[in-house]
Length: 276
Image (cartoon, rainbow, N blue to C red; front, side, top):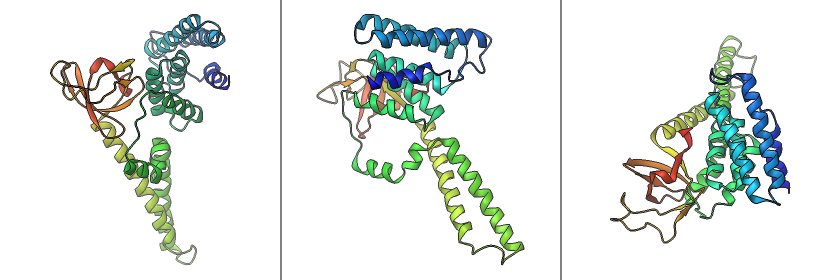
């Protein structure tokens, strides 16, 4: 199956995950663990259609190996988190697949394989929650803000900022050497747009916490108490639903869904994207 092949190709690549290992795991030890985890993933993929129990066991072993490298090795690597997401996806755990894909996205935003598999995982979420019309329009107009990595936007800002000043100085020294002043204005507008995009992203990440429902299903309630408050919706929310956490209470959190609705969820049902 093509989906299986695509995921497997993402796993068998070396991905340079052993660089920067901490004292708890040397680079050579990390290399051994990575090779073992990749082999478990290969076995799980091979057994997927013939023996589901064996496949899940192999994917569990692969996940344990990849996560051991991240935790004991002290490694923050987007490709490694992508591998974890792929293993969860093949295992059928949509919530933790999306969670780890979104964690990887923070480090390797713009990776085409990651984008493809994240989109595929989102299609498999039981709840279909559409963004409001105005949000869809915003995403269409500001696609470059959502889809371009922060480091790329910063690089464009820097080049345009420096370029605008160099052009201005050149115009002052040799007025007839270059064209009019409009290129300076264009470079300046691009620089301001990129800087504004970076500041908006920073403020958004600081003010709220992105999360993903990892429980099989959970009941959203109108308040932080399962006995005192009735459900917010007629159906439960399922694994993989993405939320923004607005507030915490003991054992509960207030979450905003993608369509703007808010509900109280049990804290154990949600994991933060930045939690690893």
